Length: 124
Image 1 (cartoon, rainbow, N blue to C red):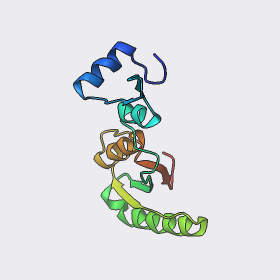
Image 2: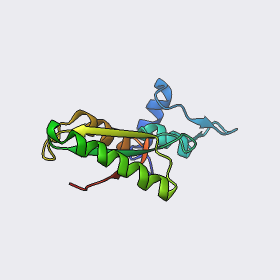
Image 3: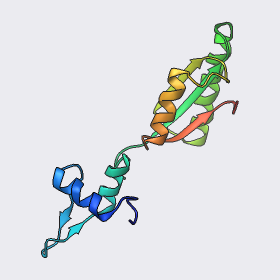
Image 4: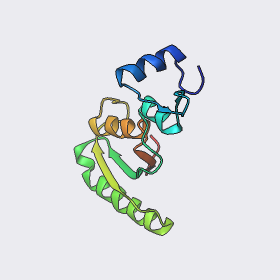
């Protein structure tokens, strides 16, 4: 077990089944590159674009004007900082509700490597 976190035998089985096909040397030895390890871990290749996301949230629909102000403030901040925003995610929901759909999608994007930076107005 090295960087992959699995045994040599597991790598051999995955190669045989086509799940993780290795490159081969002239002597027919298996060679795994960082690309193979990233595929195994479900990460994106280094050359794939990673997004900068602005996430704005308020607790209730009555705070919608505050949400719009947050979005404008974050846009101004990012422009002043020279950051190119790829997506703005506004959401209405309580901070203790960890089942917010947009929030969960954002976390998945971050964990899968699709998102490089999340910018928030308030850390709650």
